Amino acid sequence: MKSTAKKLAVCAAALCLLACGTAVSAAAASPVSGLALSGVAMPWDQDVPAESIEAGSYTANMLLGSSQQLSPVVRPRNSTDSVVFISDDTSILTVSNSGVVQAVGVGTTRITAAAGNQICAYTIVVSMDSSMIVTEMDLSLSSNTIYVGNSVSAQLQVRPTSASNYATVALTSSNEKVATVNNFGRVTGIAPGTATITATCGSVTATTNVTVMSIPNSSTGTASTGSSNSGQVVTVNPSYVVLKPGATRTLTASVKPSSASQKFTYKSANSNIATVSPSGVITAVGTGATSITVSNGTASAMVTVIVNRSAASSSDNSSDSSSTEPDNDAPIEIDPVVQAIQDSEDNEIVFTQAEVPTVTGDILNALRTTGKTLCVVGDGYTMQIAGSGVKSTTSELDTMLILTESDQGIEFELDKGKALPCSVRIDLDVSTYTRLYLYNAVSNKWQYLNSYTDGIITADTAGRYLLTNQNLKFANINWAFFIAGGVVVVLIGIAYVVLKKRYWFW
Image (cartoon, rainbow, N blue to C red; front, side, top):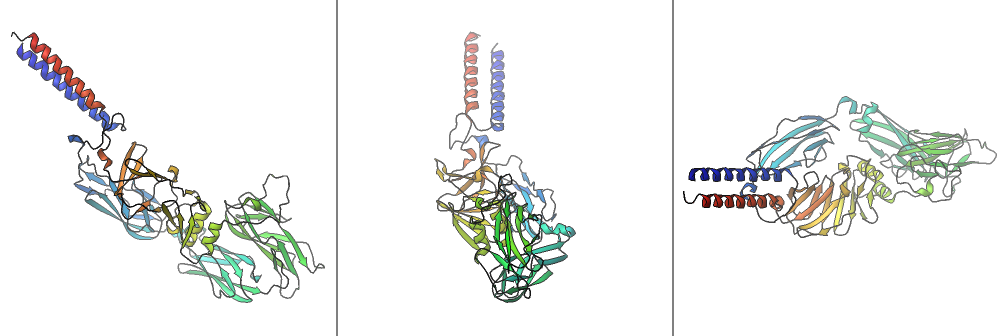
């Protein structure tokens, strides 16, 4: 019987170990919950350093605009070291925290994957296929004759047309004392004379000439021009229109002398951006800049039209409004941030967070077009958005960061968990912390990103961030299964004592 009792005890112990193992597996597979003790690690919860990391299969040649998932192989498989990805040149390749690579520029660069002290490298070449390369360009102006102070829009056509999404075109003026041109293709007359406007994309160029004349009879808020020998001057109110997509605006035109024909024709340089009716009603279609030509057959005038999503409501006519006539005396406002990016000679434009609560798609487009950097100064931080890193102009970026102190460190949420349109650099006023974590909503845990130095964070993922000096890998341990295991052990002990006392006389 003694042997029987021992066998029963052994079986009970085996059942206890099995129960504990099941509890451990369940705890490892489920989010952290229950009783948590900080700073305690069990033998099976110790760090398992990575012994090696291999690149695995990947595509070494990528086309511009494509993406791929990098899946490095870390050994041993139970390693607790997280994989960190770094791009040597983010103007060519960007990489997310999960290893998704985006080809954003042409060239060759390297992605480094690191797990603990082990690293591996991916050398990737990014190129354009034939449909992305500009082979020909045509440059034209909505009018090649303008008056001092007036503007016209440059129209650029590239071939093949599919390359328009990838073309990087620089616009220059041969004589900026006569006429200037900005990155949006707006040509402005400065002084009487002739200048050549040149568009350059790689080795391909296109040119057109503009003649600037003195204004014979001008008035504030109107555009006017005419042939040098006709003696007629067309005036249009307003000369500059900013609309939201779908909004309308009516133009008012007149000709001097009054004996000249007062019958006008209207033509849009780009109907994909704005259309114009025979009566002079402009309808905004898609974002961008274009011009409307107003002519009486002898003389003409140009009206610049900019369509963006942040246009001032004062310049809009709702398409379903009962009145078709707008308030032409209402001021036309242009997004001051877009205007500052467009006009500034500096590569960095600085605004406060209150001035730029949201980086809109139009601002992102202006940054990407000009290659400039927007610096937003908030309470305890500065956010930098570089135009070279903008990947999407269809989304927006919330610039508000609320730095909240906790027992672990400082937390903040970036862009309220939405998809970031670009990589964002955040300079914080605090630099006393050493570790940066991102909250993983799927696993319900803090995921270690990298060390935090010099108060600088480069983020390409929206979400909750934590700055701390703690190692959070084992900061939260589920102790429920330990308690359950302890209860099982106690019950086994009681059973063993009962059995031993029962058969003591044996």
